[in-house]
Image 1 (cartoon, rainbow, N blue to C red):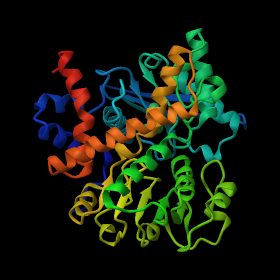
Image 2 (image 1 turned 90 degrees about the vertical axis):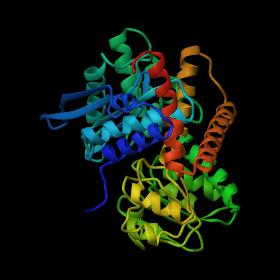
Image 3 (image 1 turned 180 degrees about the vertical axis):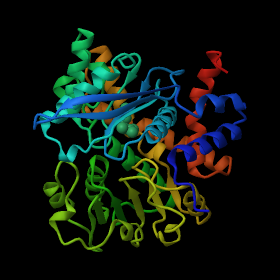
Image 4 (image 1 turned 60 degrees about the vertical axis):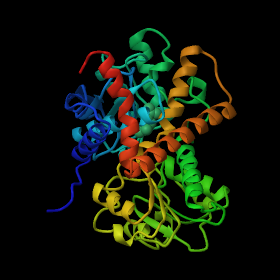
Length: 414
Ligand code: GLU
């Protein structure tokens, strides 16, 4: 039998394991194994050619015992109900790990924004907000950007919600443009969080970032900013990739040039003679590997060919359970997604706080607060992995489930 590549069931399994390891009762697993609420919506949208297309979308709210639910909305042809559910569960874990007063939520629309005009995207974004408006709001569930959604889409969604609410409601959504109440540093926040995790992991392994060979899979929001941060820190970014291929230069790539040529969906390799595939990229000899693209990239099949000594997961679910186990046995330090990619939601929280108080912080303030959150979270997870002799993923889940478990108990839900 092949390994389990289903993100939803493998997340359930790890949540179960984490709760049992912490001594929580089975009823907590019953509560946390699925989102409390899942809304499916169908949205007719007028296309530019005059036809009407009906899109399907979802919003999952995993658990709101700690506070309102929080998480992005992704626009992608591969979105499905189970994926959205798993992603909402990951958001609960992320918020727990960095200690935010939120539970997890997530949304998605099955569509391909690469083939849609701005007008079509705007109509779809507004239709989605109208369809889910009853279950979202600044004190209920706060959306944000995710795969193929950006600050412009957040702006349209905020505007639509504000019309429905009859108030200007910047706290309804995060990842907005700065002029509409967005936070300094939000755009770079995910990559910044990944960078902080890389620094911490490198310290543990005695690796100097200056001169370290780094491979980044994916050149979207997280991957592109991360490549830039690593390059600026003196690392040698030897390979990057996008959905269409990968570029490799053992002497280090010219990251500024590639950033300049990248389109808004993170595509850049199509402009060059692609030197290798996305699959080969993972097996390059390097010190630090950052999967920042899609799920199920490091599996039982290729894990033994991975040469990096540190893997920091900027994407959601890039490494399977079996691969995680084998990397751990080999002594590879893996910083799991729910910790490494928590920088985005952390600065989203800062954005929401600023919206609620109507007082805005400088980029330095944001970065300082973000650094503290991620360093504390990293140390807590690392410590538990050492003291309980578990891999970093299980340790992160153990830290991540605690807040929701305790809050659910105090509320009398279990
Ligand atoms: N979509 C991002 C994530 O998966 C950010 C969520 C947010 O900012 O609420 O963590």
